[in-house]
Image 1 (cartoon, rainbow, N blue to C red):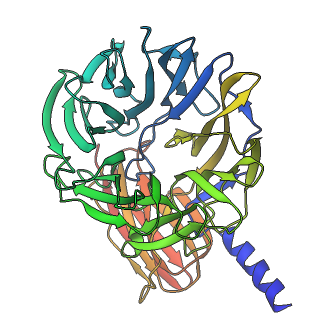
Image 2 (cartoon, rainbow, N blue to C red):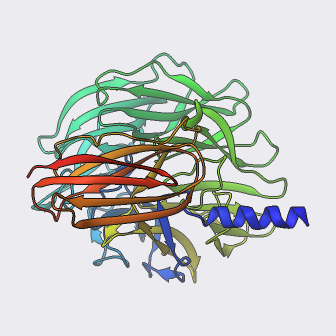
Length: 494
């Protein structure tokens, strides 16, 4: 009986609103995105540092399409429901191209995507080189070489720094190269060999933004036993200088590094250290501690993709995730499987154990007060490989948990920045489980915003307030939590 009551409590806790989202029901039915070709390797932009009020209204996705003996790189735009238009071919020649990636983001708050960069591998010069296409308000450029020098280059990944500048990493002759690159003028602003101090083979790099100027690159390196360890390198100045690589994961065979955004970027990887392929992360919210995400003595897990990665030690159901699970006789995709909550889980079987599936997950498309999240993946059907997708919506209420360490007392801080235009953050602490109400008034006492959150756990929080549709003037932010009540004055200046 006690166990049953505990299970009920955990279930209710997972739905209680510890997180900043309300879920709109389950995943959509399975939908076909492409047909008639061998379409593989879908990819959305790398995860950005979190900012819940700077999401675009549509997103790019690139993928690889094989036609006869050649392959082409295509791009699609997604809105809140599906792809907006037909695939656009970025390439056309009769050579092989593979492993595309794309980098794009909003440059100005509440704007659309106006600049982007797509990258891929091409063998058109008799070896593997990195080619690119730059997107600006005039459309996509013709393909151009990003690195066609000596050696073979593989696995490009990129993030966007500004309208024209991008941070790009790729493998070149067993080293990891970083370039800060101006895609408009096609000039290299800085270049670093991140693995010059490592004698062994390095490959499979990823890059992510960790702050306004901070970058993190993860990659794998071969060990003496021919298994792989994982390294990380960081930069605080958009990649002009880098720390020496530091070992992130060594025990066992460590593969397929992933990066996910949360209040800090999570470093997720696969390892066989438990006897089966399991998924682990280094949780930077708790001192970079190693934590198990998904582990089983019966299944192998691959290719986890996740949005707004939860703190593993909590029952947070606000994540959205997809992972490949291989059993003794089948390959399945499991959805919302990274969280300890069972709410919203879904799955599909894509075939037997020979099937290789790659999942792409977008960064979040904003519409009204919701976010659309798409999981896109390949499935073999009738001699072709088609792209399919499922999606879910989330509603943002604005209250974001920044720390679960117990606060000493109730507290409400002054908003920052102040004055502000159009957004500002207000931080507050609650020392115990509380019902929280936030009310925002204008200078004459009229209510302009009201948010309630029941059963908010002890910890530190912040609320992002937008005055986008309000006129300049004085506003008051009132926090009511249990018997605690406090108000701060804010100034909106447009």
